[in-house]
Image (cartoon, rainbow, N blue to C red; front, side, top):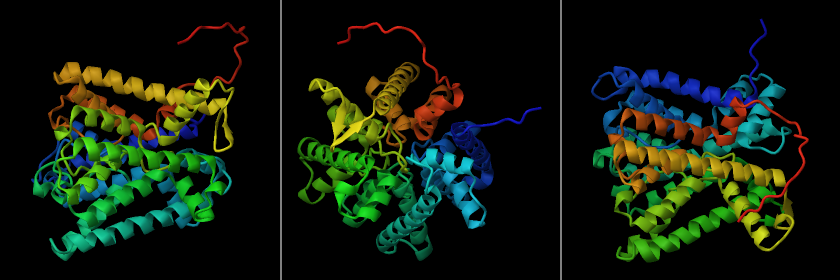
Length: 439
């Protein structure tokens, strides 16, 4: 009998699935809940998927429902999901002093969205050091606040949990004792906590390739890879313009000392952290629409964030404007973008939009809710954000399965999933060309 051979994409999606199932079994155990009761398996699958896929959508308030054991399981899943299962496995292999095989390097390259296999182990070591540094730095700063409110051990746990959750763009919080599902609303005006959380979200969402460029070339922007330039350029404007919109059109009646803080937090958290300092249900429809757009775009490739990615969004824009200018090729920063990249971006864009819309329509029918509420929920799921208008806990089992699938797809990546299940057909059709009028 021939051994079953899996390619790198199949290993990635399979490993996520196995970890979700195993951790779901652990979460069902009485030791995982505060009341010491068995928890519904589907709800545990939902929680495990949301944790591993660093989403943040929850059917139970994390602080008040889950025990310390359950919270530790959730935090471990967040850390694994943020870095990627393959990277965690590779780190263990490196620590044990074993050699990383070529196949493992190739799979790791796929996980990190790296452009080449060469130097991938060195990059992995760099990433783990950076992750530990930023998470401990964030926890240390958050501790300065929590130590004044709680016991030392409680303050350490809250600081570490929220730092890892923010860096991994997960959006899980332990502030439910201030009000179930309240997220960070009780800390809306706290500059120290808000700034730290935002910093961790942005750093985690930039992508490890961008980190590498920044460390190597410092402020010499011209030496950065095109991907790093696009990520930084897009991230800057996706923070700036939404902040201005929220500042002038959404929170203009807020006190001056918290207006800017709330505005910039609301522009950062949808890509793709899911923390909230105000309940999204209180936003205007225009702001909800903008938030949906930000959730769908998400973070950057090879980062802890989800979504269709900033590079997909900007490549689509560059390609569009090149057509408007009647140029033969899409160019930016004195570089040309290959047609294969544009085709991939289009495929990812169409996949996300269709899954987001179709799933939203199904939820709208099944749950008898407004289309805006349904689309907000599905964009949050597939963008692995975790923000909700308050309908997650009320979803039927069918809708929960749909959201679980969207979270899973959003984290492993649409193309990764398709490549894993579809056979490769690298052959030319041999058919003749014929023009088709579009637009």
